[in-house]
Length: 61
Image (cartoon, rainbow, N blue to C red; front, side, top):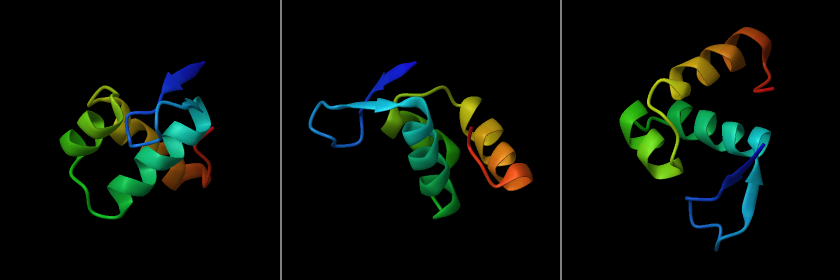
């Protein structure tokens, strides 16, 4: 699945794992869930799911 880069990537596309890594990193660096979701163009419910997966498995895949 290909996602559009909403984070200043100049319009290049991000693969789903790259997007998830950026989302997780942003939240773990202190950004609120809603802010991260808006910045990257993902649903608010996806952010905590991806963070929980990362914390449980040390992977976003």
